Length: 507
Image (cartoon, rainbow, N blue to C red; front, top):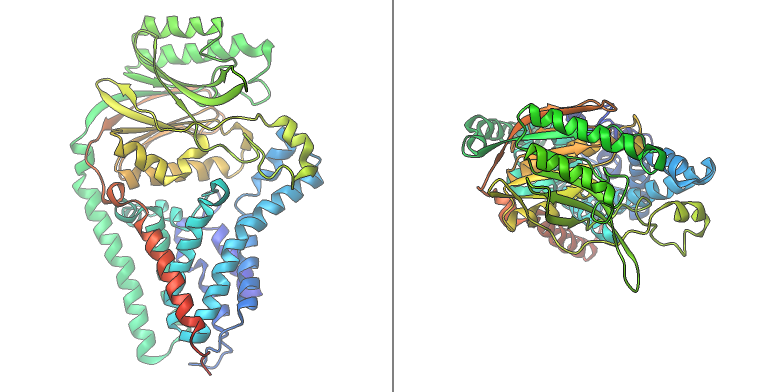
């Protein structure tokens, strides 16, 4: 159990705000050694039962996710109106759900090790990736902080995402952990070969990635545009307070004029920036007039109301042209569970106040291209940036610049905003596109196609920043093949599990 606890702690320390991605290279080693059943005698790995493997994985996963998504508790308590014991319980359910995927990976690995010996360790990364992919899609998906995201702290390694995506990075990290676990367990020539192969894998990917960054093709070949990011820093309690509407709009307009004066060609406001329905409210005229006066297009976030037999509400992004007219509208496709809708309401009957507090948004259905200075851009709203396939679909449709608008005020000073920003950085590398991000309270920024952060604001500062991005047309291999690594990993996992179940355990 101590080994599982250690892996959980190390996994948590692999993510921001309090850790570093390099820790991920050893985070799973204690768990894998425990799954081997090693009893201190060199060369003897009896393994553990599938039930024991499940329990070890569950413990490691619970500690890991409790240490990384702990902030959901304070969020649902503060803004969902839940008593703190209920908020803790709801957070515990989420953590337990996420930990279950690690538990299943542990059970599968236990079966493999008992049948295949140490070769089962080499298969473990495939199971991990397959289950990460399932977590990102089942019940609408919750692809928060996949293991591969840790590598954005090691940019040369992170370049692998341009070939294989974040799941390819997860596979790489898993293989490194399996290699180090093999070094800890093996002896003699096998240990030397395993150590050499593991270090060669790290070195090879790092050298290739460093060379890719040095060549800088995607930056040199792009068409430049100066982007103004407006960070209004509006407190969550003020956003829908009628008495604060005038202050909110005036703050955004003042910052917008500052960014335009600083040379911005296009401006971005955050998610749900306007304290009214932009498309229908006369108070939006002041925004249109300002856009017309400065002669710059503006992308802004606003809730949208669509009347009908069943009234619908959308979390939307409006692209205004330089004349202030609406050029395009994107409606958020992936809604935030417990933030924009409450899943499994019949089962979670005890979160009644949360159901009342959470707006019942409808989901959009399609990616929308945003015309911008003769090029095409796209946007993702808030949590959507965690979905690699959404960005890939935008690039497939012709997006040359990725934008994302968000409101992370919900999460205060916690790790959430930093985790969110780093997931956006991985999307930039995957697609080989600049990514520009406007966040209400931060972190706003500009990230280049190699994951380098060119501009980054601080949390809870009121600021407008201007920086250069570029429209890029070249497609990465990942943009062409998508999550092939995850699909192959799933097939390999099922095939290896079937083969293991037909084989007798090793003595």
